[in-house]
Image 1: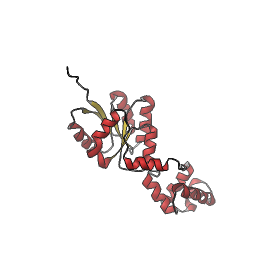
Image 2: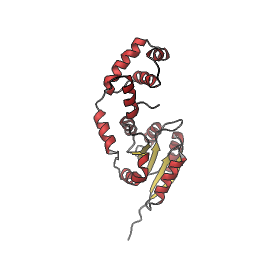
Image 3: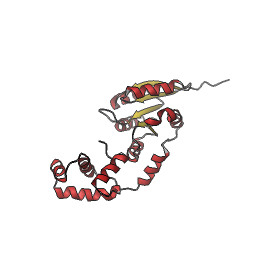
Image 4: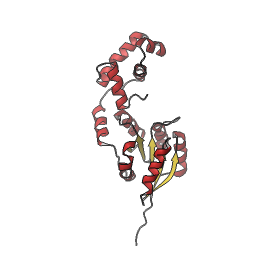
Length: 210
């Protein structure tokens, strides 16, 4: 007697219709998977998850309103066994680490969707984690690093926007000396040589999101 395996029920969350169409096309070719729902925002994702209870959710991180990270945390708070794969264009370790901390079980770059989506879904559905090797290595490399404080992030955002210390000080209602002190603390934390280098590293790692 043959056992009929139920197809893996998948929900895709992204505010780009073209990507959702691409995901649907990849899944259509699979006999053991079915796309049960789509959502274009974090709020819609949480609402749809409650209604559909998919086996695996594919979640974009950057969406208007509630972000993917917030949606992952909200879904996992209500459904601790939810299996979520992050879909992103950014390979930064800081963003990946934040997604895993929020409860994601997989991390997939959008550029690799056609090649690796099916394997990633199968791995996560089977209860395993799946993260690209280079990102996992970078997470491990930075695991002991001191995190930037909220104030340091605000200062670095100002620097990234091309603002002077004086202007950053005015906007944050602190002294120019305090801005310089924060920058002195930021550089060794990011292993950066100067302000510009610090911004470049923070953007590459996904610490800053402009």
